[in-house]
Image (cartoon, rainbow, N blue to C red; front, side):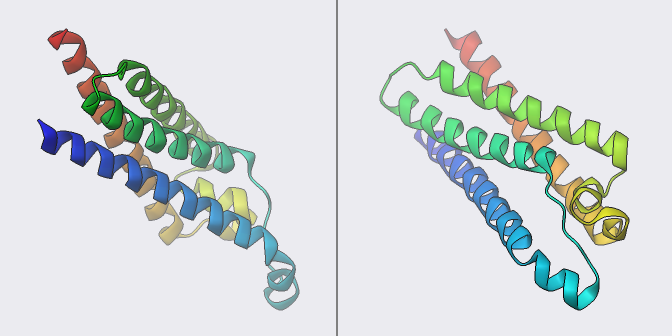
Length: 150
């Protein structure tokens, strides 16, 4: 039982780290965009949708980490697991919605315009969608298991 709590804690830390790295990369792209505009005639645009998805990923990671810590201390842990499930669900919904609007390379299209529609960005967007889907399914199954064990 303790091993699963440690694995959930590591998953929460990993989700938070992924979200923080994405925010760092987003901020760096926006900061150095004038240099790219001058050198390569390439302009970066700000994307509220990507920022929202990244914030939801960070919230999900923090809630998963707090869930494992609260469960280890026999505190009220269901609220953290519920918030993690909700933030993963919203993130999944936004990603699917943006993929319907812009295609699989929605991250590149929102940041770079038409020049961001490349295969590498499609693979990264699809990978991030699969990661979010697996995280959502894991939170849903753990929540269901916790409700059945009560």
